[in-house]
Image (cartoon, rainbow, N blue to C red; front, side, top):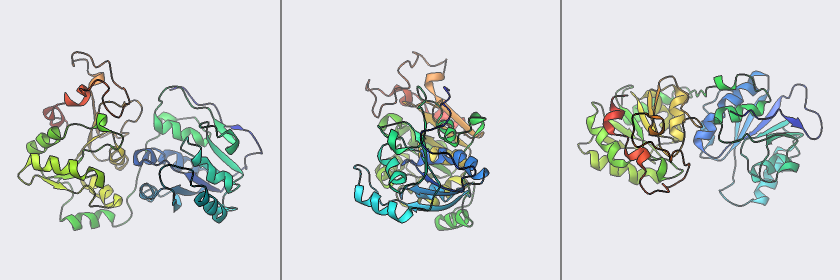
Length: 346
């Protein structure tokens, strides 16, 4: 990857040993998981970490032992929501020495600025030069995201070795299994959704055909938005092979079921990164996106990406397009991954 430049102070001096740090989290589950190595680096040098996150991402940080506290933001998608940010800024003013702003948006940098946090670290983006005191240049292209976040620590050594790790709260796994009347290792998990768009989703019929071929039941996990997709897969698979849990578990319960699964199959999605960080055996299916940019960093992971398959003809020169919907209308990159191929990797 093209290395980001070293942190550059634009005003004031960095504290010799920063102790109280606020981390402004991304708004996507997968991105939140990929920030874990950064937080481990910060905690490892003595920083006491509080994470500010939207409610649907906050549970990810409760599975990171290095995080001392989580503030759930009252902000919604869209708009600056100036009044809410001002009110929260007044509440936290004086509590932090450093803020790490992980998203590249202007509004994500507003809270640390309004709270007068002395040292504010982040990448350049969206005309927020004046809101940050220590800035990194954005690297060219699409570098590996874990390294992208970890570089905000100011230490660029060993970025390629960073691997996200999540730790379930005590009793979470046992409680989730008891609630579903399941035993660890006696089921598969499918995560058939992808919030970004259909160009990242393996066809529902393929998930159904794969479920039919397995010798253990399948749990279908995801958000409430993906419940209809999960129902479609379950109906097509038939025979009670699939249990639809999309939108019917908390995020932490979903984490626990993934940790206890025999294996998981998913698209490039937030739950894919959760499985990787929990060390669950998994098959990750890539189409319009790239495993060079957001790979499942898990020794037990198997990645299928036709773009890199020399035996796939004609070559898939259109991938990765990073589009929400296939610009060519065929989504060959996912349609042509057969259920039989995936089954051999489980």
